[in-house]
Every structure is written in C-alpha cells, then in structure tokens.
Amino acid sequence: MTMTVEKRGVTGTAAQAGHPRRRRDSYALFLLPGVLAFLAVIIVPFLMNTYVGFTDWQGVGSPSWTGLANYRELMDDSDFWASFRHSLFMVVAMAAVPTAVGLVLAAALFDYIGKHFGSKVVAVLRACFYLPQVLPIAVAGIVWSWILAPDNGSLNALLKAIGLSSWQQDWLGDPDIALYSVMGVMVWVQIGFPLVVFMAGLQRVDPQLHEAAELDGAGWWRRFWHVTLPQIRPEIYVVLTWCTVAALKVFGAVYVLTKGGPGGATNVPSYFSFTTFFEKTQVGYGAAISTVLTVIILALSLIGLKLQTRAEERA
Amino acid sequence: MSTALRRYPVLIALCVAALFMIVPFLIVALNAVKSPAEYSQNGPLSIPDGLYVDGLKDFWERVDYSQKLFNSLLISGFVAILAVALSVLNAYAIGIGRVRGRTWVLAFFVLANLLPQEALVYPIYYLSKEAGLYDTRLSVIIVFTVIQAAFGTYLLSSVLGEFPREIIEAARIDGANKWQILWRIVVPVSRPTLGVLAVFFFIWTWNEFLLPLVMLISNDNQTVSVALGVLQGQRLMDATMTNAAALLGVLPAIVFFLLFQRTLTRGIAVGAVK
Image (cartoon, rainbow over all chains, first blue to last red; front, top):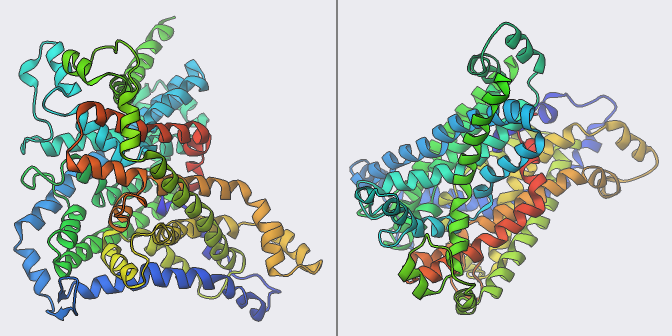
C-alpha cells in the first residue's frame, strides 16, 4: 500500500500567502523525533549494510575492504541466480495470478453477486477470501506444511479417498514439485489483498457507463474488459507493484515451509541472504545479496509509481 | 426468469472458491481436537469422535503460550501506539506545517518504507548487540515503530495536506499554539484515520517474522509468530502438536479479523487510490 496515496495534497499546492516563512519553518521541530529515529533505525543500518557489501567480514573484528569482489563472486554464483529465478516464480504466484484472479473475483462480487444477492453475501464471501491475509505467515506455513505432508497429510489423504492415489506426492520434499507447492500456498495467502483493493476501486466506476454498455448489448465479459478494466487501471498498477515487491521480499513462508530446500529448490534472495548472514556468517557476501535485492525493489517501485501516476492523470 | 437461473452458477462457483479458502482452517480445527491414536488410525479427514483437548493443553504448557501471547500483545500494542504518534508528528510538519523541502522529506520516508528488511537486518542485529538491546522486546518495539511510521507518515501527510485550513487559522487567531492545535484539533478530527492506522500497525507487527526471529532468541521474549515458526522449522512436532500449534496460531488472527473486519476490508481503501 506504499504507493497508493495521492501526492497532490502534500506537494502540489504552493504555500499559501499570509504565512511568513519563519512561522512555517518552526514546524520543523515536529520532524525532529522522526528524523532522529529514522537515522538510527534505517539510514545508519542501511549505509552500514551497503558498505559491508564491499568488504570481507565475518561479523567480528573489522571488515576488510575488497571493493567489488563480492559482486563479482555473485555473478558466478549459481545459487544466487537460482534464488532470483525462484523470485520470478514468486512474482507469478504473488502478483500476476492474484491480480488476474482478484480482478475477476472483485468484478463478479461487485456487480454480479452484489446486484443479485445483496451486500451481506458479498461481505461474507469477501471475508473468506481475505482471511489468509491477516494470518501470520509463520502460522500459514504450519497449516500448509501439515496439509502437504507426504505421510498422512490431508491433501494426500484426500487424493487417496477419491481414488487418485497415483497423484499423491511429497509436495514439499520433491525438488521438482516443491517450488510449485510453495507458489500454490502463496496464491492462497495473497489473493485477498488485490480483491479488497479492486472492490474499493470499483466503487468509483460510474454505473452509467455499465448501463450504457449493457443497453448496447455488451455481455458481462465485454463490459468487464472494456469498461471495468480501464476504469480501475490505477489500482491495478498499485496492486501489481505492491505484490511484486512483496514477492521479492518473501521470507517467512520459505523459512517455515521448506527452509529453501530440498537442495535449494525453493531458495529465494531474502532466505539466501539470511542464511549467508546468520548460518555461514559471511556478512559481506550476505550484504551484497541484500543490496542487489534492494536495488531491484527500488527500481521496480519507481516504475510502478510512474505507471500509477500516469494512469491517474488519464482516469 | 432465464437470468434468475443463470445467476446461481456464478454464486455457486464463488462459494466453492470461498470454501476452498477456508477449508485449511476447518481441517486444522478438526484435527487439533483428535487424540494422536485416533489421528493415526483414521487419518486427517475423519470427523473426531470427541473433543480431545489434551493436545492443546500440552502444547500450551510446553511452549508457555501465555508468555508468547503476552509478548506479541505487548510488542504490537506499543508499536501501534508509538508508530501512530510518530507518524502524526511527522505528518503534522509535512502536511500542515508544509516545512521547506517537504517533498524530499516525504520521498525519504517513502524510500525507507520500500527498503527490504534484509538490507537492515544484520546492522540492526549488530548495533543492538553493541547497545545492549539484543534479545529484548524493547529493541523490536523501537525498530517496528520506525518501520511502520514510514508508511504512516506517507499516508497521514497526504490526509493532513487536505485538512481544512480555516479551522487551524481560527484556532491560531484564538491564541492556540502549535502543540495545542495538534493535540486539541488535528488529532481529534483525524481520529478515524489514526484508528485505522493503529489497527494495521498492530496486525502487521503481530505478523512480522524476519526481524523478530533474528532479534528475539530467548524463549521468554519470543512472539507467537517466532515461537511457532521456530518450532515448525525444527521439525520436532507430531501431527497432533502441529495442529494444536496451528489452531492456537490461527485463533488470535481470527479474533482480530472479527474485531476489525470492517476496518481491514474497507479501511484499506483509505490507503488505496484516492
């Protein structure tokens, strides 16, 4: 939800006449606690991390400057590339699929169920889809690792019960399947967020547009495609950006479900940097991994913000 | 008539999808009240014979769950209040005070909000050790107060940017100083937004995993999320215990959800476009 607030209110209007500069600037005192706290908790640690990325450091003693050595090593590290490749899968599971499914669900709930069955039904269904979003990811991980367990897990038991024993799998333990299982869990976790944002966005679509399209004989799908989608384009960019960033940061689910395994099959950059920091204690190398992740996230966020602003201007 | 008949398939499809979303919760509840013997005999899909709560009790005592709940409540509660306070102070200067360079100050908070915690975690771990704050709940409260306030500042700055100037002018003419205007006028008028923010901060902090996992290593300080995540990571739990853990982890989330449903599913619109 970072990029979701309009900036106009804060930055657009010029300072109003009749406010001497002296009076305005004494407001700066109110920023003091915030600025100090941000320095201590965000700026200093971030600069330290960036610096450590250019050094060789085991967490004790003083770091020794090695320039770009860590980054050169990353380029040749197949684990590093694998972790970012897995990130792309996470983007599919946490951004692409939830956005697409969320759009259809939101539109169906809003102008189909809402119109024909009332807002109570809508509220209950929306609550069901949103529930996983309030669940701590560690708890979601426990629930799913038990459901997906190879022996006596619910999914395998269900497959057996309906006569599909041959479909049983070691869902999280088979290197060929584990990544897809984690993706499935992430879709379940993520779907509520786009749904709720899109439903809020649909409320500002002018119903007359829909009525006009309906009179012209456009079916539900055509109205969805030509009326609904263009109208909530700003929300789509917001959700895509936000979910993509969340997908790149995914950590808890991997920690609890697979610990990056089996054999690195589900390793992701944040888990990779975590183990490099705290298990291998190659702090310099871990810092380099997290710096690359940061650069990618900031770049994607800026692009998302640009697209959103442009869409808002047009809407 | 024909449209009435056509409506139901959509409703049924959505209900099936919604059911799929909550089935995991139902299965967990079902199995948390089965005895280990019953579980191994009948598997995960059978209806329990009776209510077996020993598994839940055992788990509660073994992980000292009351303490974990208390830690989570303490940390999330303090973060919610302090982060809203910090956000209000920042946003007051940016949105209403319109301090010079506010665009840059705001950009700074936005960037802070986007930074992945992976890029902060090791220095925070290192610095907190140096400062003697490692493995304390206070350290986690401080860190999350700042992290959540980054989002809060961003959101509130834009809300307060549209605060009616006439009210502030009127108060100023009546002789109110800046603190009085903040506490007597701006905060009470924006209370609904502040409430929404506090709810989100509380739940986000409750659900946080990476930083608490790194910062809180002793059992007495761990949050619910960390304790359950670590237990699961050790792969030491049998099926009944896993389900007890899952159920006890899910319950607070469901309580919050029921308490704050309206805020969570609609309040998010405050943060969404316009």
